[in-house]
Length: 395
Image (cartoon, rainbow, N blue to C red; front, side, top):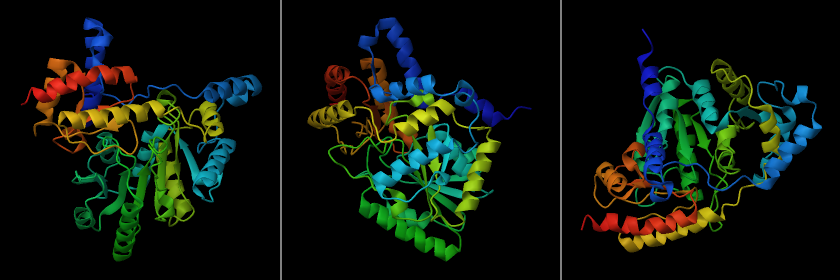
């Protein structure tokens, strides 16, 4: 007998991927210019020129045996030191390369954390709206996901529900800021209040409750929005990161986990994460792009197009009658749907207007829809009349 859960995961794509595949098929039928695909978070701006330049330089300069060979399981020591130095410059930390464990993107970083920390019966708290794969990652580690309902006024934290959800089985809390799908950024006051609650509850139960920060969108922030660096506010914080969004390198699968010295028993926690990587078959992250990303750790792609699209969509959707919380970062906007049934709303958008947007139900937040605006601005401009017609079709 096969593992039926794995069969199910292998035969059913996520709702986002299903819509993305539909868009490709529809584009082949009627032309890509007639399909307005806002389904998937695939960066639409190229990596900065320094990325290719660095890769070419390394290919020309390094011994190929060394370049294409295994690195240490935890990552190339030179790359880890360069990344630690970048974090120290930008956030006033005191990391060394030994605080970093290199991974296959942020997804692998999260899986290493969940598998390294979880014992049977443990729970991880997640705040809606949330990236749907979190549940797959958590349950794959043998733990349970406990979902906190969304604060739809500002997409901060529903603290009453959060505090009530913490119990003796709570192993960790997962936060994603800037947030996929809402684009919201947790304020410093939100982070401080969350840290106070976690410190009090950790003391009450006599065990650390870990704060896991999923940060692939950290650098995509608008109009000087400040994104608090969580280890500065709570000691038992693990940071999961990826260059998929900031450097437009989703296909290179490069990320890391930071385990600060301030984490309780940090050497054992690091060992647990490394052990999880071993059991998951992560021998080492790709050697070339460990070095490329480390050399460009202070760089970002040109995110100005995302800000242009954000401004255009926020203003236009509000004028059409949609209720929108303005994103502080990412390349997503998460308006309320005109009717409460977000699935029906998104199906009408899909089949009547060739607008591909993702129902909020899959993100734990019904009555909303995610619009991924990492697309050319021209596509956003041409879609506005369709969003308006969609809204008017319900009036």
